Image 1 (spheres, helix red, strand yellow):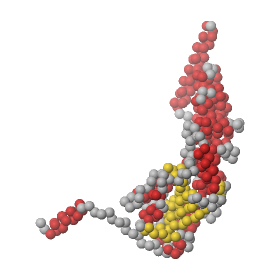
Image 2 (cartoon, rainbow, N blue to C red):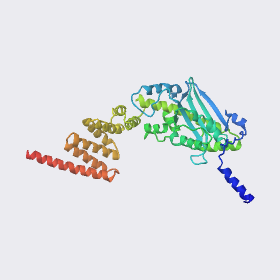
Image 3 (tube, rainbow, N blue to C red):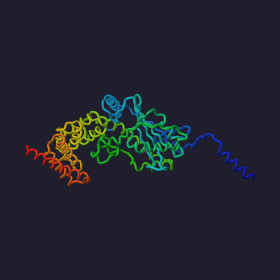
Image 4 (tube, rainbow, N blue to C red):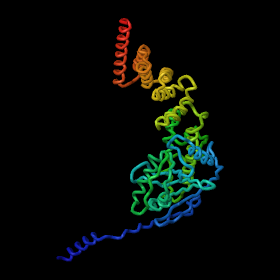
Length: 415
C-alpha cells in the first residue's frame, strides 16, 4: 500500500473515532466598550462571550399611562377569586415574565434578535433587564445571559410574541442547541390576541402605540419608529457609536411597561368594569366568554349591553338570543332575534330571521309568524351576498311552511 493510501486510510479511521465535544470558540471582547457604557450599558462576560446589559428598577408606585404597577397584585388576587375560567386567569404566585425583543429583520437565517427585554416583579419593586448582543459572534453568550433557560414554568407576557418573538427566539436558540441549556416551553399570554378579542371593530389599528394612546392614556415622547430600529443597531455595531441605541432601549422599555398596564386594564374589563368601555367592546367580551363556554359570564356582559336600544346593541341581542335559545327560553330568544335583526347587516341579519322562523315553527307552533320571519330572511338575502345554499334553504323553508299552513287550514275546514 502506498504512503498516500495509508494517509487516506488513517484519515478515514480518525473520522470514525468518537471525538470529545468541542468547547465553543470564545468571541473577542467588543471594541468601544466605553461608548456603550455611556448609554447605560454594562459589559458582562460569561462562558460563551460578552453581553451588554442594563438594569432598571421601578417602585410599585410607578405609573405607566392610567395604570400604576402596584395594580397588578389586586388583579391577580381578583382572578383567583373568580369562579369562571379565562386564559388571562392566573394566580398571584405564578412566575410572570413580561417579555419583548428587537430584531434585525422579520424572518430568515440572517435575522437576529439583538435586544431582549425582561420585566419581573420582585418583593418590593419591579425589575427590568435589557440585554444587547454586541455583534453576532456573541449570540450564544447573549441568549445564555438572559437566563430564560432557568425559568421554572414561566408565564410569558408579550404583544404578538406568541406568533413572532418567541418562535424567533426558539429558532435562534436552536442554532446553538449543542452549547446552550434547553429552552423551556412556557405558557404564553399574548396580549395582542386579547386586544383583538376586546376591541375588534372598535379600533382602527391594533398597534401597541395606538392601544397606549386610545386605551392606556399614554402618548410616547422621544420614541424611535420601529422600522428604523434594525438600521440603528447595525450602524452601532459597525461604527462603534451606539448613541442611537439609547432610543431603541427606551422603545423596548415602553413596550414592556405597556404589557403590565394592558394586562391590568384588560383583566378589569374581563372581570368587573362595565362602565368605562363601549357597547361594542362589552359585546366582544361577551362573545369571547361564549366561545370559552363560560355562558353565565357571557350573558352578564350581553345583558348589560342590551339595556340600550338600537343598532349599538343589536349584535349583543343576537348573541344573547343564541344563548337563550340553547337554554330553552324560546319566547325570550325569538323576541331578541326580532329586535336585533333590523339593525344587523349582511348574512348575520339573514341568520337572525331564520333563527326566529325556526323557533316559531318548531317550538312556539306559530306557522303564520314563522312564514313572516322566513319572508324577512328571503328579503334580507336579496340585499346581501350570502351563500347560495342558504338561499335555497330559505326557499325550501318558505315552501314547507306554506304547505303546512295549507294542510292546517284544510284540517280546520274539515273539523
